[in-house]
Structures are given as structure tokens and as C-alpha cells.
Image (tube, rainbow, N blue to C red; front, side):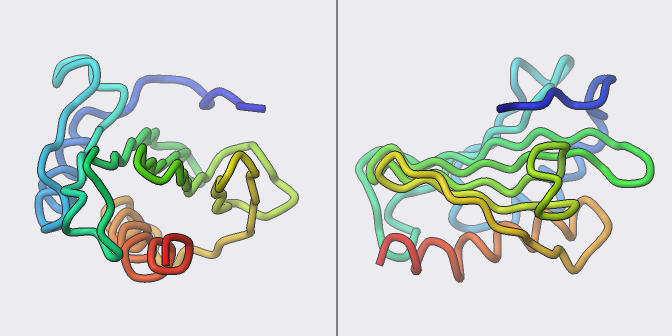
Length: 147
């Protein structure tokens, strides 16, 4: 079940900040795009070089899709990673789905089975949260679920 975001459009300046402060600094990422474009941005999509991921994957490039809405008291976001080579999908969500797990949760799918886990994010600002998520993806999740 997917609960829609609580309203409004994402902040284009926030997406520019996430792109500049986080995504452009991750050496694994080769391209970053606003979807549908930089004027009406509803998502950010980042493409990974499959040879830079540990363990390497390929030949198709994995993607990270980011949806972020500023909300009070806590932002609404979904950061989803998918690898077409391994059929591995992972997401960090702070939304109204799975409230039994707390404010935020991590979910992943392997071989068509989805697992949800509570996650506690250490940071409160959007750029630092995204850094934390990407670091967790690259250093813990991918080696664990692909290795």
C-alpha cells in the first residue's frame, strides 16, 4: 500500500541542494536528473556506475530515486534504490506507511519478498539524512544483500 505524500510540491531549491551537497559528491553516481525536468521537479534520479558498487553489478546501471517534501514537524521522503541486474530493491521511507515501525523505516525486496524494518536516522537535516542513507546503502546494505 502506498500512502500519498501529505500535499504540496517538493521544493525545487531543496532538490538543487540535495543534488549539489550530496549526490554530486558521491563518486559512485554518474548522472543526476530532475524528473520530469528542473522546473517541475517531483523527483531526483541518480544513476550509479555498476562497476563502482561493491560487490560490482552490471551491466545495467542501478538507480536511486528521491522524493522529498518539507513538512512540519518531520519531512516526508522516499529514497529508493533499484538494481535491474540483481532485482534488488531497497528504500528508506519517512511517510505514513508502516507507522508501527516508527517515523522512518527501511524496506528491501529480494526474489519478490519484501521485508520492512524500523530505522533510526541520526540526522535531522535533509542533506545529512540523504548522506546517511547513501552511506548505509553503499557500506552496509549492498555488501550484505549482494555478497
